Image (cartoon, rainbow, N blue to C red; front, side):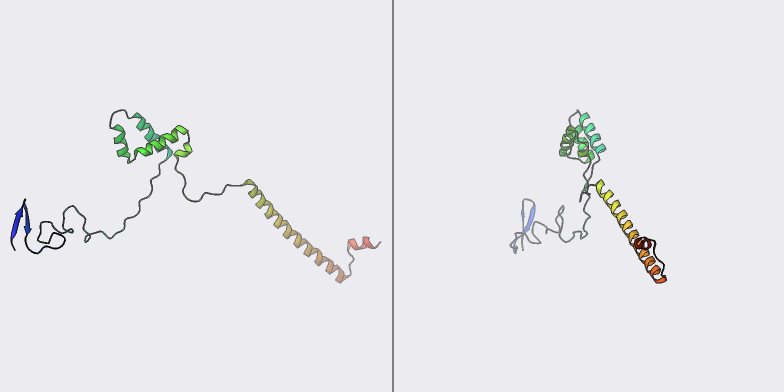
Length: 167
């Protein structure tokens, strides 16, 4: 094999692969190239998914105040880089501030919304419990009255209501 020097790169003459470079060619293999990630040395660990950032109304108003105070060229960009924000964040927050919706400045709770509390439902539950309690009390009273009637029949004692009915 004979080496040929071309523009500072040494190429080996002879058997070259279909790809145009061989291990003894001018370019190192992909796994050895500097500045490139190799498939061989990849990290198998799965990174945790980052949480979505949430901004409070106080933070948004503070950033808007600082952004409005920026007058020199580059100050606003420096503020955004320092806080890790995008200009679209400022645009959205400014629109919300102009509308006067402070509720729009607070982050919305994610997930299912809670059902609205109905005051009549509370009263209805209270009355249902009371109705059930009184129904049970009435059943006990009827059982006691039936037992008293049976005992008076067995002993032959006339009931107060029966004496009045016979007259």
